[in-house]
Amino acid sequence: MVWKRSNFQIQCSQLPKEENQTIYTSIGEIVYWRGCYKGSDEQPTEVLAIYYGPESSRSFRGEEKVTVIGQIDYGKLNELKVVGERIWLRGTEKVRVEKWGE
Image (cartoon, rainbow, N blue to C red):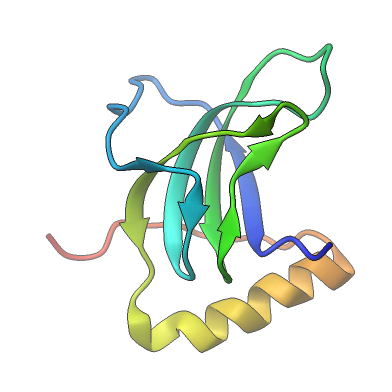
């Protein structure tokens, strides 16, 4: 299976509202995922994920809802896919995430 997202572990001082939740994500969506587990004996973590292809969100427990908090500019989706696949094949890279416009 090829993952179509890049995850970044984060820690929020204020939890985002649980709204715009889904298990089906699309290319370019930015989601907040609280309770993402890597294994059954671990504590939940907070994750920011950027999807570069359609996928359903899930863990070892099955489908898990995520909160959609943003969308990558549609003009940058091809670049996002290239970077996402490169990270999947070669490993981690530094990424800078910033809010754009209002």
